[in-house]
Image (cartoon, rainbow, N blue to C red; front, side, top):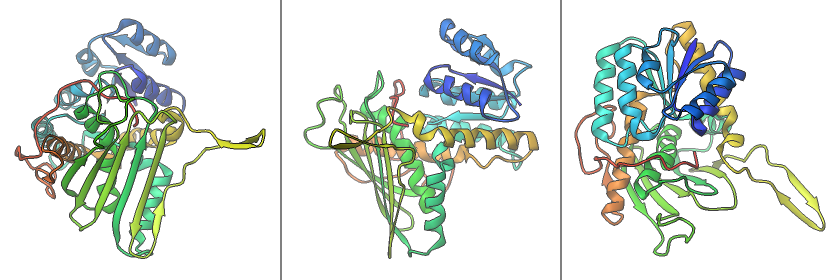
Length: 354
């Protein structure tokens, strides 16, 4: 499969290296970025051509499928262009900052593929992380009774440039907003956003950290903590509390060091050490499925639109002082309509944690 990548920042360059060096059956043939120096460096590293216009990449005859890793606010527009060109697409999260835009993508996608193999998939790579996959398997087995709560925690070293309270929800918290309903196999129906009265002084004006409460259709109440400027390291945690037990993720790849009468454990600086395997497995499944002519088992475009609706409801709750806000179209993937939890949040992506 000849893959074209739109966007050659940290995420796009990371995908290019994985596709080039660790995913079988794929080659990166083109990259596109308005920054010629950055595009040239990413292209040279994988033997691809460098372009400045994503539309040229989408239409290029040497590109069979497209991976979108551009700034968040461009995702919906570029996904629509890929659908119009009939090219399979893996779009990094989020699908959009706008419920309306997400619905446009859904309508265009359904018109293009009908009941056939989906063209568009969403980059929620935690669904491929071995720890989260095993956690979901154990919870689904019913061995510990019904799940009643999920505690999902995401902490990072520092927020990215241009982050706002709204974009942090759409760019960072959105992983958890997809993860919780995936783990519980139940859609989010209501959202409530909360933050300390005195936010961390390291957030550059962000209300950081913050907490989101999620009610799912199965009756569970879950928590999502996001703390982009925790400083101490990149730290992801998740616990599913069931009726007779709790199922927790244990952090992999940490090395304990003992010296000088002290003991310490290293913590990664960003997402790459923690989730490299999840990204590799996600990309391999995408490429293998495309080559075999079947539907990849990645998150669907409907999943991406559902996460956008939950994020929009969280933003609405934030603006309403933490009131519970109903999620637009909850329980019916792709439902249209701009309810209280919809709308848009303009701005650049917030960076980490992924």
